[in-house]
Image (cartoon, rainbow, N blue to C red; front, side, top):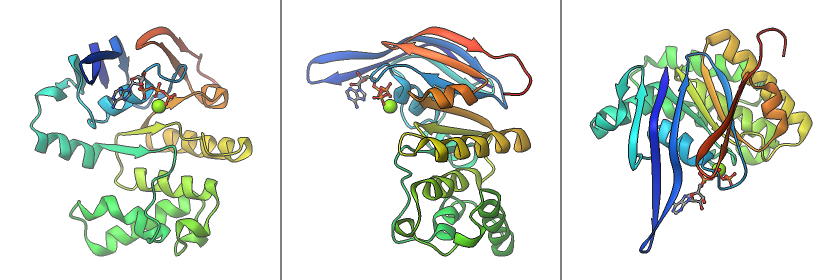
Amino acid sequence: MIETIDLHKDYRIGKVLFPALRGIDMKIEDGEFTAIAGPSGSGKTTLLNIIGCLDVPTRGKILIDGTNINELSSRRKAELRKTQIGFVFQTFNLIPVLTAYENVELPLVLLNLEPDKKKERIVAILEEVGLGEFIGRRPNEMSGGQQQRVAIARALVKEPTMVLADEPTANLDSTTAKEILALMQELNEKHGTTFIFSTHDQLVMDYSRRTINLRDGRIVEDKRKPKGPR
Ligand SMILES: Nc1ncnc2c1ncn2[C@@H]1O[C@H](COP(=O)(O)OP(=O)(O)OP(=O)(O)O)[C@@H](O)[C@H]1O
Ligand SMILES: [Mg+2]
């Protein structure tokens, strides 16, 4: 579970402090499929980066499974990022000179897996996201939707407990966005992986089980949908 307690983030621009997060209190349980929504500049990316241990809060706490991550050494934090957290970015962030297979292999380079096991996992996840035939393609030989699938495979290959996706559909047309959301939904249900999105996109909110709305660094609404078909 992820819990934030009175989380604040100030950015310093010259001599001026800008409060990007102003007291975020929330709990996200394991296996949730949650969107963080809100207008541009409301603090979505800032919040995701702090949850993902890519940035630190100015004040307040963030607990992952009860551990205050501010108190972890940078080595333990890197370990947490490496094993538990997968990232999906708006612009996919694939390495252009590497094939789909090699891009997905990257996060595993840091883990000590047997070569055969590693290969099996990479092929299986690429097949799962529907890219079985694209294993040898480079990003510029694939569509946006296919590239985002590679990015999702890369986030999931290490079998993280949570995936953080910053505007994952922003560069996709609505048909492809729906396919990608359905895929993430399926992976969420099958593996129990927690998914947290930041988004402006109504489609993402439609697919989500819960929408946390931010305005000016504060939660203004936290809406859950009843269980059942989405
Ligand atoms: N590195 C930084 N230095 C200074 N200010 C920053 C920095 N990063 C973000 N901000 C400011 O903090 C606020 C929140 O930014 P953030 O990127 O979290 O918003 P967002 O909700 O993700 O917006 P968008 O929908 O446009 O991606 C914004 O006003 C932004 O200008
Ligand atoms: Mg953002």
